Image (cartoon, rainbow, N blue to C red; front, side):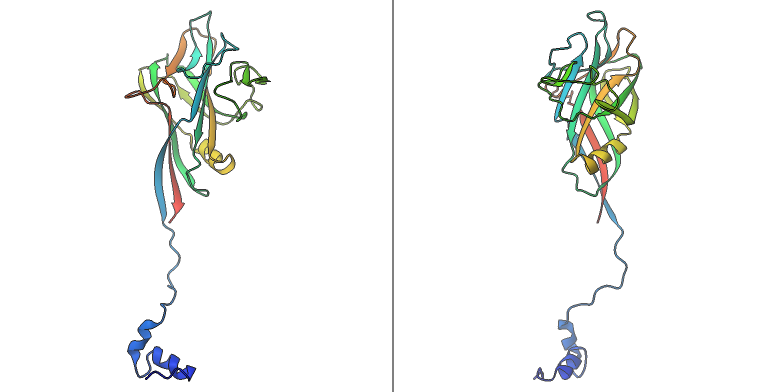
Length: 232
């Protein structure tokens, strides 16, 4: 029988003394190999959680529930339209590294290849059911109407340049990696963006996209596609 009263004999036998088979019951040693540096890559598509068009010709009217326009129309002497969108990426784990991010929307009216910008909204408490051209929520004015002040209403830091599509259909805006990483790291995964044309002086240079409540079937709402890596 195994002599457990003498620790030296017990350990000797477990480690291959007269009965080497007993060594198999010892816990395995930790590996001497270096820790794995592999990462896992995943892509998630987030549907917009809220969106809103703002119209300069109806500065006190909330437009929630409609399509999303960007640019200057030929209506009412030339409406200027900006659109706001909010995405929640909080299901991406903290510490993840975003490698690619893009926004896809369904265009129902193409533009004239106008230059446009996608910018982060600073006033993250804007309300989709209350915001208008004049206010970001009831009784709280934008610093400049239409989410127009760089620094107080929105920031041009890390803004993304894009162009109006010349054909109706799905339109993808690339280059949102930095804005998405910032949202994940510093804003609880919430990304708030405003879309506007660069030149808002030319009539009939505008484009229109399906909103959250006007989308359906082959014309989906705005979606943010995010590819990220995490340690294995």
